[in-house]
Length: 138
Image (tube, rainbow, N blue to C red; front, top):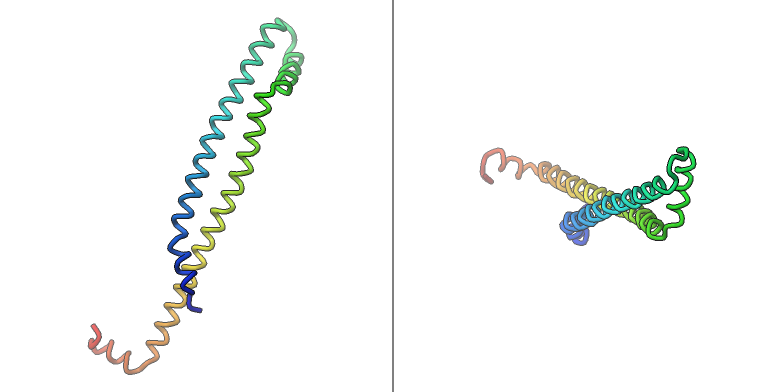
């Protein structure tokens, strides 16, 4: 089946669309890394504060105090919420990029099959095959 004009235009536009999505994904990944560093720093500050306040208490008490302190910290909760949002956006953009890649490959295959079918039709023409074989159309 011959690709339509819209499909050919889409095939030409797909690499740019995929590139834009990949840039967005890279930006989200760098933001995620930054937020993870911020989260680790906030947790470390809570650990230091708890260690200095509790002194020589056992590890379970410090761990429980850290969990409570992290749950009560609104900044830390906001960072965790943002990380969850970023993870969801990354999944969505990955799915969109994969869909565009599959679409691009399907359009390429469809175009290739059409070209092969047209060549087979041309080779069935005896006069044309003779002319090509004789070097008249070189």
